[in-house]
Image (cartoon, rainbow, N blue to C red; front, side, top):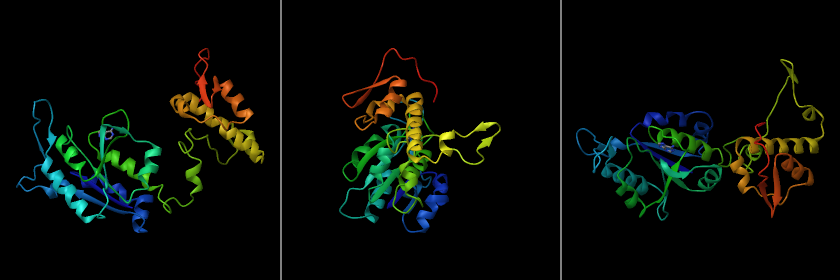
Amino acid sequence: MQIDVVSIFPEYLAPLELSLIGKARQDGLLDLKVHDLREFTTDRHRTVDDTPYGGGAGMVMKAEPWAQALSSIAEAGHAGEKPVLIVPSPAGERFNQALAHELAEEEQLIFACGRYEGIDERVIEWAAEHFTVRPMSLGDYVLNGGEVAVLAMVEAIVRLLPGVVGNPESLVEESHADGLLEYPVYTKPSTWRDREVPPILLSGNHGKIAQWRRHEQYRRTAARRPDLLDGFDATKLTRADRTEFSDLGYDVVDGRLHRRPDMPVNDQG
Ligand code: ADE
């Protein structure tokens, strides 16, 4: 995969040289380049921003340096395809695990890190002719710029590329892999400060352990992220799974979970 990041703070992206992503780059699984937007300015002061038309606080990123940077990256990239241009923004589509999987299939991703009040909107319109533009938000809060969002998105995407995570099994049983939160995990010693590991985990009964873990996922998800259960496919639940959901206040109707209105809120997650 090829990833290009454009920013006025290229140093902000230095962590992409470390750990798993750094290794993926060394191993040739990922070709990642960080570009300084100011390299694409033509004035002596290397200006990238100006005051907003219509007035108001803050500054807006000028269109031309962005067009120059993005054209240069597109020309150097794979001809014939419309590369995906991700524009991190709190006004974007919410990034999640499903999108990480979708983006991990792309040949090339370009990330445009805005700062200040954002990028002149005409860049986004112009870019749509040459790129598949995806404004994307990390969550409902405001960061100072796109760089931190890019660090998070690139990590979520790159770890899904074949060969990047040593044991692919670890991608299967993690939070959001199956639309649920992950079950709790424990390691030695079995008693720590008078706290015992749940005995089922020491039983050697793999069927029972799998069921216990699944039910812990249901409990946690119901307590912490009940919104995730709205889209949950309940058609393949066992009788024991249904009983667990019933105890949590959910009935299965037409293959979907429905919360019984009389249930107190579950805060045992
Ligand atoms: N830039 C500023 N805030 C952001 C957010 N929440 N997500 C993505 N990019 C951002």
